[in-house]
Amino acid sequence: MQAPPAGVHALIEYLVRHPDERGLVKADPDALFDRFGIGDAARDLLQSGSRDDLSRMGVHGNYVIKWLIWSGRPTMPFFAMSHYFDRRLADG
Image 1 (cartoon, rainbow, N blue to C red):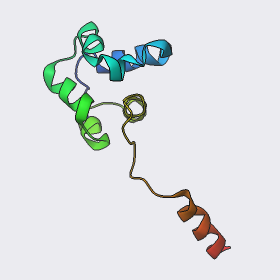
Image 2 (spheres, helix red, strand yellow; image 1 turned 90 degrees about the horizontal axis):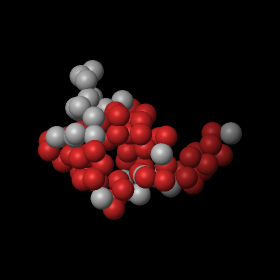
Image 3 (cartoon, rainbow, N blue to C red; image 1 turned 120 degrees about the vertical axis):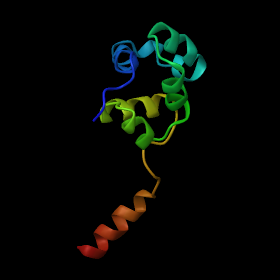
């Protein structure tokens, strides 16, 4: 696994410790990116990249999920919960 771009893990770790600032992920991400010195390529991926894109750029999996949740993006493909329960009943 490659090292993440400069500042990305520090930014996410900061937001873990300061939940009151997580709203900036949607409201003013550039303020956060500037504060942590995150370059343009990483900014683009953080704002629009998929779970796999973020992972490929070296972001730790746990941080990928946190970032996607805070930015209001899906962390995995959607499926109805009934799919799990219906299958479980059929197997039981």
